[in-house]
Amino acid sequence: MHVTRAGAAREYHPPLHHGCTALRLQGMEASPADFAWVGLSHIAPGGGADMDAGPLGKIYVVLDGDVTVTLGNGESTTLGRLDSCYIAPGESRAVRNDGSAAASMIVVMPGPAPVGREDAA
Image (cartoon, rainbow, N blue to C red; front, side, top):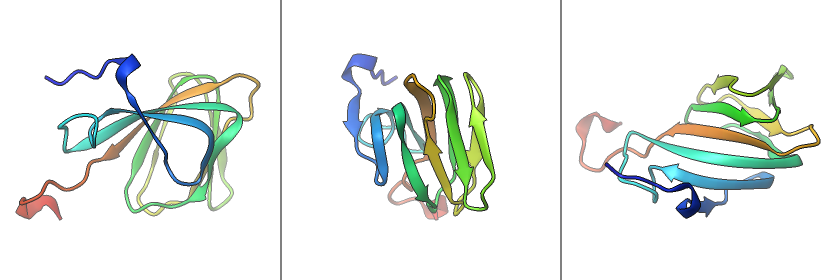
């Protein structure tokens, strides 16, 4: 078992994000988990992530506050406490906190392909 204590989680800096503090909880440099990584984003009022599409799918789970997710087609939805969404690979999305209080959100994404595995591609 690999435990990451909340106070020991390290900050990382995702591109195109502003007004956010992102902490890696598991996977990548935080633990040996190789199938996925988990991050915790604290989003200040007015903060978020600019419209972008990545090659990997992702799951968002809002822990506190409200987070508005807007897709490239203009569709927009606001997620509240314990609401979640899945963003498909290649799907453009922007994230923002339009509220007056900070929001917290878990991010789950596939991990990098393990080295030496034929089925990893």
